[in-house]
Image 1 (cartoon, one colour):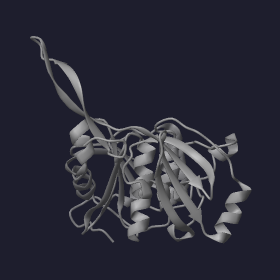
Image 2 (cartoon, one colour; image 1 turned 30 degrees about the horizontal axis):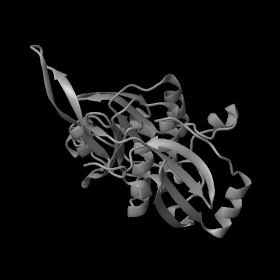
Image 3 (tube, one colour; image 1 turned 45 degrees about the horizontal axis):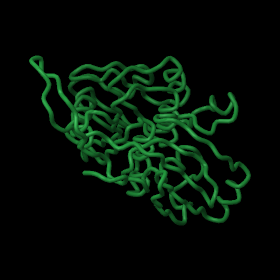
Image 4 (cartoon, helix red, strand yellow; image 1 turned 60 degrees about the vertical axis):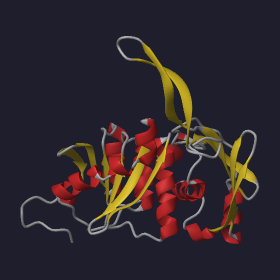
Length: 275
């Protein structure tokens, strides 16, 4: 796939094989500037993979608190420009008035999770409290993570993007989104789930990345009871997950994982079941 609005393209490269160079091609992910524009004002400019753009726009607005629900976005227009993509959103009247009071223009690099934060206090805002009595067995956590690699089509082709997925007992992997930025992948997933009307209080959020504090903040705002990641968390992410009442499972690889917060949601024993 090629072109500015495609998620990947093929490029020429020389591969060293041990005995010499071999010519050929490799698929690499696209990375382009993507602007989030609300009611005519640019709110953020992110470097992202140009795919699932409407999901990204909705998820970003939800995770940043620009809107409380996807229904508060009246219209989304994806506009291709010479410099990148402009995701133009028009908010409902009451939300537009609230947004006008906090309007600002910001810019951030790939994977930036705190773009637009104007103070230290805002960066460390308390996480949304998670309210769920869901329980998961170790086998379910292991099975959920095993569904990610085969579902990551872009990463299979490029080996260069992050993935975020949502898994639910009895339903399996409900949705997955990919991006060069881990925060972008999570925002895209949040947008997809909102558009689908998926209730997230009974499932697992799956990440192919490390867990930083802003990933926990986004997960808590999404409302998932547990976050499972392939890599380790930061100390601040653990503290934030504890504050939010979020079960944080990390270093989940193969048949092993580590639980850092709310271990009561991870059941043990043959007679355990999911509520």
